Image (cartoon, rainbow, N blue to C red; front, side, top):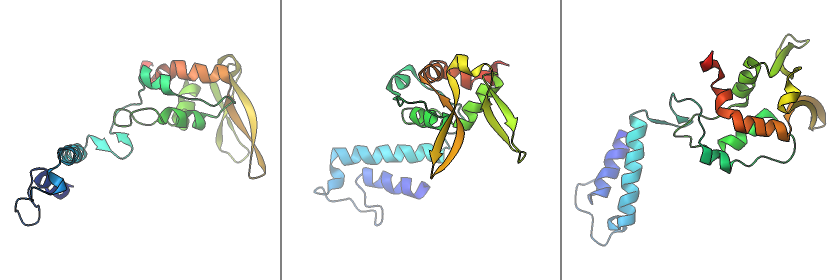
Length: 178
């Protein structure tokens, strides 16, 4: 990455990075748009090298969403599961400022708040389930079919989707308040 940044810097300064000679004035590399592009990519590489940017988003930062990003969220009209809700949120957030929202983490937080529960399956695994408080938050059990197999899942109806969206920051920071 350091070598790539050095090559970009030379090109942006009008120098052939391989032989050190000035690039001809007629070259597309002297176009102001190309020079801005090269400096932009060089800046991104500088930030990656410094550890400020990672593939998955902002390194070490918590999940966050702005009011403007919330306004851009488009949720399906039907009841949706937690992972579909997370996908809708992740499609609008700035992943250089916030980590992605995960359905698993959202469920974990809702369980901490007592809005969802857990039960052990016959196989000894733990699974998330609705509890006596879930309905008041717009969360209900549902069934879906995938590849001919029916399975149970937790669905967020219109009330549930609104609750999640309106309270997302509070939900995701719930353990920090304890």
